[in-house]
Length: 539
Ligand code: NAP
Image: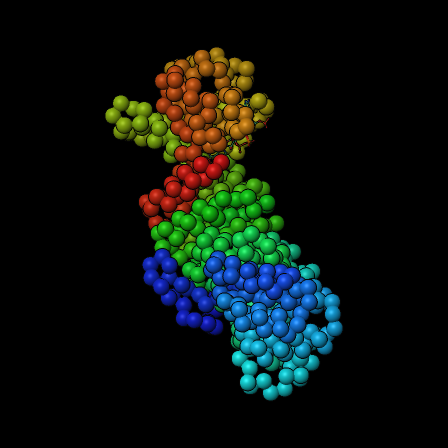
């Protein structure tokens, strides 16, 4: 299944604004208000306005009681456009009262000038009969259907859309539940082709992309919560602030390129913060999403459209990502894992890279060049011919060992589990030493040391993986750890006269390289630097 972007634009003109703040969609941000009293509801409406929402959904089913006076107060004092909903328990809401009373309250909301009301599909025909001839109302009627179990097939949802349209609805609303991230594609596809305004939402953590990409595919509105997350009417709703500031929601348009990080779990990832800030800073028309993926191959097969262009890979998908590539960078292949995948524009082929190794090697190369007397390279890489000792044969150790080897270093590996060191050394063509031999290992002077263990990482900050006295044999010491930035190992290495290279450099370099691969734009690193400095301050 491929997705194409909407040809149909419902609201205000897109591409309004200038520079980086160009508005590329007319999708509205709607905050559900679910307080128990009218006063509290009005406070929340004001908050929603301050936070940048376009409209509110007054969920009257959460009020202690509903009466015409309260409704009038709410509609008269709301500073945002209003959608009035009284969701009954039989459709997942909180209203347990009489159906006739409920429908008459909805008619009253129309009379009082609500901008929109929501009527459930199950009672839509009955409701439309009761308002026979509604020429005098300015209220648009949303007819809705909610599925809290799953997301049906595209044919079934298509039938549902047709049934809703047949009721006379002004706006179609379909909300389903994501079992898998691929479920979003069916709703997004229907948004694209809908002939009348449509709200298409997939609920649950795996449905987040539907809420954000509704702007790309022409959704009429998306729901978001207040910053304090007081009112969440369905699982998976982002905050208005996240939509506007983290995902640059107003700038998402039909031609926006989609990127993301594939992982499981993924909600902790800082990558969306980093890349969305960086994209915005250079005016790049792209978005970067957290993608909670179960099967990499299913994800890539489903989102095969040319607009889905670049991904980062994190635990546990780095190896599965490699298997889905059409072409893989030779060192990534040797390491057995990718951290970045790009869809090549001219043929759509998926190309995999291991940026972790590129970032680490670039950082150490810079350190080695600074360590030379004039700071300039002789011929080839400054690694060439050096002896590089790597402590730790895990993910970072592999990246460092393969990277150093590819630049001409001779590699020695040690690990607390000797079998791991032996395995990596045999693959990379290096030697092994037992961890107990490390402190006395000094076959030559001026060696490179790379720590790829967590020894020294918070909270273990008073430890280091090698003795102080052994450090004198090394001219450069790199620590992959970046929390804290200055580890005990680096402090002691500096005292013994070695050039030191921080783990943050590896982190920053891999972010720079990945940013360049995503955007094709070189150089604009200020925002990435600023973001990473901020991140370090908060760690
Ligand atoms: P990993 O896959 O768990 O690998 C760590 C390896 O070090 C394991 O094989 C571990 O053995 C071994 N080890 C632990 N203590 C040791 C000791 N005292 N002596 C020798 N070997 C020891 O972890 P990783 O993903 O490679 O990460 C390692 C460190 O690099 C972490 O601090 C991580 O935060 C950092 N890192 C930084 C970046 C960056 O961008 N700067 C990127 C990736 C990783 P066991 O299996 O027995 O524990």
